[in-house]
Length: 325
Image 1 (cartoon, rainbow, N blue to C red):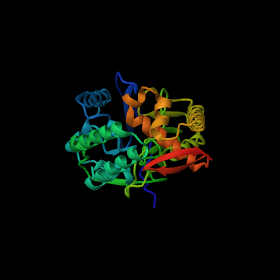
Image 2: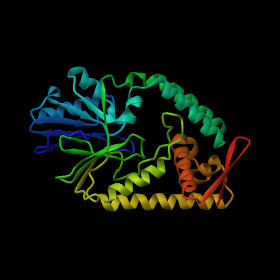
Image 3: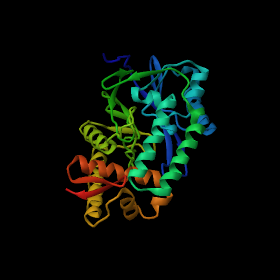
Image 4: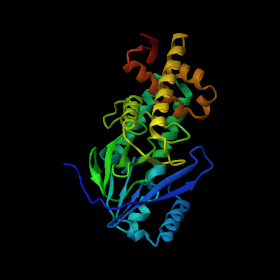
């Protein structure tokens, strides 16, 4: 049964924390209504993000204790950073997709499985020492990020649930648990990282809870197509500027994905057959400097091409080799 809470007049208070990195900013939002004050996402775990939140609250004669609930678009660290500080002050409900929960709770079995997943993936893509070093990095991060475990109970929400007039839509792709919140009356979308104006969102390859590789790029394409059909006046993104031309941008992102897949296919036809070879020829020096994201992109496109019957693969000495169908 869909979860339905109240829907009154809405005022949105953006909290925009600038960063020198390519993301430009970490955005999260206060949604003020007659009977609720909702926080959507929570930036990164820094004093700066906390101060920006407090400043926006103060300018509107509000306090942290006025927040009545928290909604999360997905589990990534740059969207949940100050949630524990809020729930330490006031025990408010935190809502997220069911697939967020074991990630936000840093489930040890899942994260151990995740390490095994990437170890096998990088071996099958013939990544050698770069893969080994990335596994070492993931292992260290798993321990370091224990402190970011969301401590409060998390209430699962799903497609078509409605919370304070915001309708939930599942938009997996950038993250398997990604959701957006849509105000159908105002035609405004709280989009997390589903759509960002100045950069494309990576469809990051991840395992499901059973260790199977999720077809993240295929999911992302479907989610982009889904939202491109919405009548949207304004998108509140997780990074960068507000978006007023969402349909045009959704379609542009889809075009770029198809173009990139065609480029990967062209390289396969030219004789670059393993994940490593394709990553190196496509991304060149970025293969070394941005290894994890680069491999995620290449694997995503290989899976996408395979699902569309444009390539097939055979395993030789533990490494997948791809060829055009």
